Image 1 (cartoon, rainbow, N blue to C red):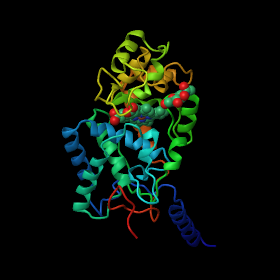
Image 2 (image 1 turned 90 degrees about the vertical axis):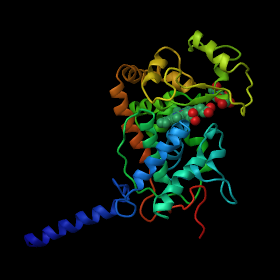
Image 3 (image 1 turned 90 degrees about the horizontal axis):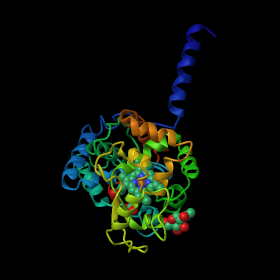
Image 4 (image 1 turned 60 degrees about the vertical axis):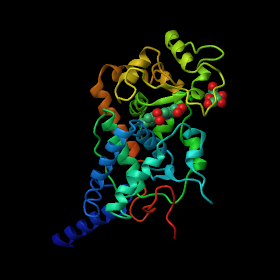
Length: 324
Ligand code: HEM
Ligand SMILES: *[C@@H]1O[C@H](CO)[C@@H](O)[C@H](O)[C@H]1NC(C)=O
């Protein structure tokens, strides 16, 4: 074989590798040709909704977690119950999730400019990215090109999303299985620096006796928020994840954990488990370090096992799979 034909062979095999490695065809600015303003439109809507209801931004952060950790970042979370589809939103693990109707507001703005072009899965990812910025968190560069699932993974939600009182080792192995290490897991839980927790998720730590790992003064405050051991789950009784800056995504979460003022069992355990405690200390002490590790972990979460290329579809209405 002469030199130039082996060069061509090399080129061909490189080309083959490029097309056969189907793992991630996500790319930066995937909609550059098909809908140049896609990312801008999502950002505009996230900002507008934030000024109307600040907690929409909080919801976009939680949506990313609940969509992406269940199988794939494929907007399966957004599917509503219809014949043949159980909604992931009906799971006990989705308790307290809100603002889904405003996802439709964002999608409608996209459909108006570029019908049938931008996936709901990318709306989930980019709205979280832009929500994080509105909450004072870092700006995260994200790839796009995710496709939407044609089915819900309602049956997988229970095993996929940890419970509020799970052990740290089971939480770590769950995140490890999607490529997020202990440091990344500690950083991601910093999402709990914003938003709220309903009393049903707290009463086990208060009644009949207060969890000894909880600061007693703090426990009195939480008991004031949650005065009965059997709260009506529908009652809007809840406590702030972070009382100091409940709407700012910052490292106060970790400072609170070090003062035994974690809200959920999983939160507080991060500060005492030998694997996670050093990261909690470092994140409490250094907000830039937190922001850097949080960005990296959010990115990994947002790229978990996406549908790309011919897989899935681009839903017209994020609540329903397309009619065929
Ligand atoms: C071990 C993992 C996790 C568990 C067990 C967990 C559990 C919970 C629970 C029980 C609530 C309160 C729901 C309620 O009572 O209304 C909550 C809220 C929230 N979670 Fe998580 N979570 C986890 C990880 C994450 C991650 C990785 C993120 C995002 C990066 C996140 C973001 C949020 C947000 C933003 C809220 C507040 C929602 C609101 O105020 O509407 N969580 N989580
Ligand atoms: C965890 O909390 C759930 C309720 O949310 C409860 O049914 C379960 O018994 C708790 N598990 C442990 C180990 O405390």
